[in-house]
Length: 180
Picture 1 (tube, helix red, strand yellow):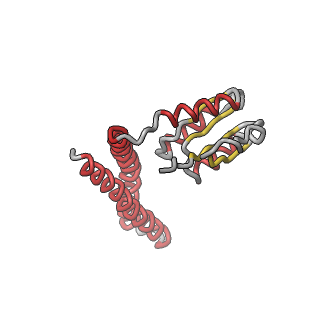
Picture 2 (cartoon, helix red, strand yellow):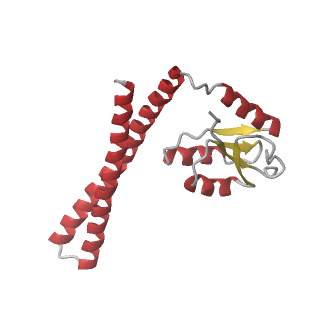
Picture 3 (cartoon, helix red, strand yellow):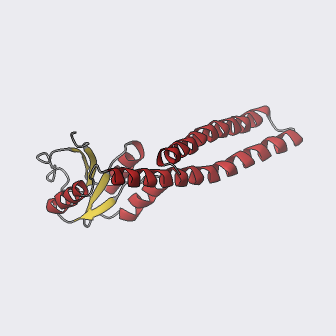
């Protein structure tokens, strides 16, 4: 079985020079700044983000990663050799043994649970405030366009709630696979 290609975001002024074209199994995206990296991170899944030493923005990238509920490592590196060493060490620690698969499933189960919980908390606030707004608007004889906007927010929140339930269902499926 051929190893899976790793998706890598390399951030810094030397990113193009460190292109890693000769490293097998890498799908590389480069960008010169942490600002551009944030845009990439919001729209693309990466296995790892490498930030060249001195670029700054590390805490911002990690905060965005956490807000998005991603498990993507953000690593500060000083040279191309650091990147290659990190990638090689990850490859060595990813055997296809059954114990490793179980550990990955356990990690996935925990992450799915964390994401479902993290998403449901703000959704509850949105849904509750939308419902309160609908009720207040009705009691105060508010313009119908405002009532409709609040109803749209509430409806969209319900749709998100259904999607979050699918995340919880995925977690349950992983539980069943693990036999827990």
